[in-house]
Image (cartoon, rainbow, N blue to C red):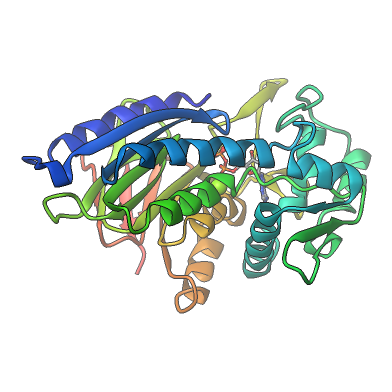
Length: 339
Ligand code: ADP
Ligand code: MG
């Protein structure tokens, strides 16, 4: 479980506490859910007794459907039999395919065989540096061309032994599903899915939400605060899951071009985007791409899927493009806004 999640949750609580006087219409309902291997905190304004129960059920349903090694899950069935009829897998793959195309394969859900070799993900076979031949063999099955969708929009097919892993996109999808469930029944919500946050609507007093962005170097601190509404703020970091071998750290974000953990000078990438699925995937992709390509990608998607980022690079320099972001000036960072 991620140590930073708790810090962010407590910070969010502090920030939300400043919401002002609450009438019944603006009363908050909160629920903590453990799903997708993380602690999630849901807060909704408006809604009724059932709102959070239905949301929690949806999170558990998605967890069950998408768990790669849970026998009987949609993804398990796909990876073992080569096909599955699953509306969630079909939707996720459709989005993953667009994102793989946009990022030139930096984000690719067919990275699963390589993740498994390194021992990342569920049911991993011990964490170790694989030999070069095994990586080269696994990379043969990585690529969007190994997955196809049936014309009915429900069937997904896979060229075995290719495998998929939706770990880099599942929380974003969950946030979008919850947002659909809530749509007309609430006035606002904060969905904190283990440190990845989506805010819906505005605060009860009509102001934007304030979202603390965590500091990858120090769990007690924040890089700064972001003010926004109807937005997702998702972070991927090379510090989140890793193992050490002979004094070297190997982390869980894999560069599909090499089969090795991404090594582009990015410590963490926070992406700010209206679409939670893209925010989640792009955070992972920017770790693979590095700072320069991140900026190129941002500009190329400016019309179709606008997003901003806050990158922490080696040496603790921070580059950000987000106008609503106020950096914590006391940190040991140099800030550079990219125009
Ligand atoms: P989390 O927040 O759960 O750590 P991230 O959003 O940071 O997840 O994404 C990391 C996860 O994405 C990895 O654990 C793995 O399941 C998957 N992954 C790793 N590298 C890639 C990649 N290049 N493309 C797609 N998914 C990846
Ligand atoms: Mg991600």
